[in-house]
Length: 305
Length: 195
Image 1 (cartoon, rainbow over the protein chains, first blue to last red):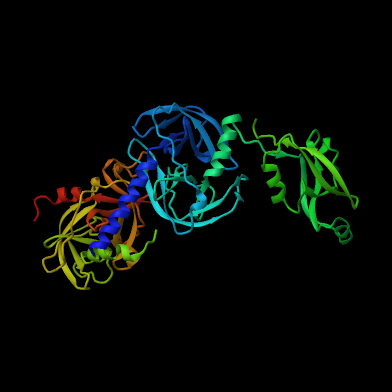
Image 2: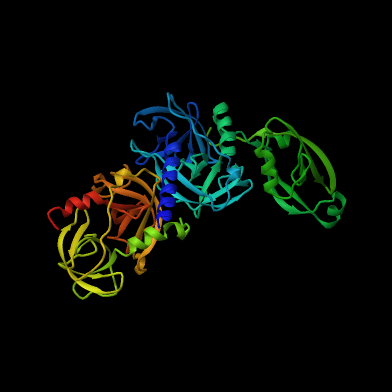
């Protein structure tokens, strides 16, 4: 009995320590009506939160752990990965201690943290449910690893960190990426997107300027080009990388940059990387014959700008 | 939110021995509408919304139905006291939740959807008024124990306890998914004058 009490009390203390440690780097972000969201002081003067909780781009403020409310400016937002970055005058606010999400396995105890007001950090408790490799979320962005937990993301917990039992931060929790389980945007994705948002305010994604449809090649062509499927060009926009490279409606793209392409996933993987301005070689089937076309990848136009 | 029972089994077993079922009226049996806590002597604490009339029936952990009288009822704070001289149930130990930090382990015992003496585990979020934006018809300014723990109908009136099984609050409701309980010192204050 005494052992039970001691072990449990120690676990309880350790969890509360983890909340206090990680909670010291959290702010409440006031960028929407009614309820604030949570932000992580990721590096000096830079706060990361979820894009979906930013409802206004001006008049943003954050509440610091000491209760002071200070102004913040939006450095950039990326709907695709549900991340937004703010700049603040951080003063003596501690910076987040980051962990390595690759060390988390299903069953590890974790916490979701939030800061909603002048009070202390708030916590939810659970376990890692599933981990895995990179994936593309429904908002279109590429997330570097799959990290889900059975944590309840309460109102205001969006943008808050996933924290392990020692207080290290493994990513930012988003309430908007999955209905069933809490989804964490891992450290690697936050670092990658934050860097781009700080540099230019948005994440540049590659663009070809053509509408495509996955198709199976006819048997004769399959034999000739040693591939089974590709992306058929349905239309080509004027003054776009595809038209400048003289791609034609009816061409079927079967490889990009040496990688086979038979669906949108591979194409989006290529275009999601650091490719804007680079010349990539496309293997195309045109009128049944293989053709090589060089395309200088453009930057995807952004909505509403 | 589940965890190894070897950890929690000790404190949970001790607390379960002090949690009763509470049904409305003199003849309520079996169908307990909520939970109650053996607070001291023959006094039981529950939620005001569990006992609406002057009488209540206590169902002890060993299954005995005992008649009780509702001797105090505070609808604002959602706390009621029931005196049941015939019930022999060991009293709980209480503790002030303001001594706990966010993230501290807590657990609840109650009868969610009629499941007797069910244990659920979670962590403390805060002991404070509710955050702005969590609506509660003006009651948000009262001090609540706020916890990340699963409560359901049937938990009302039952205990929230710390890792050592000391009762820190009386489960009252769920707002925006967050479990709310009346802090134990508040219950003591309402009890003052009764022994």
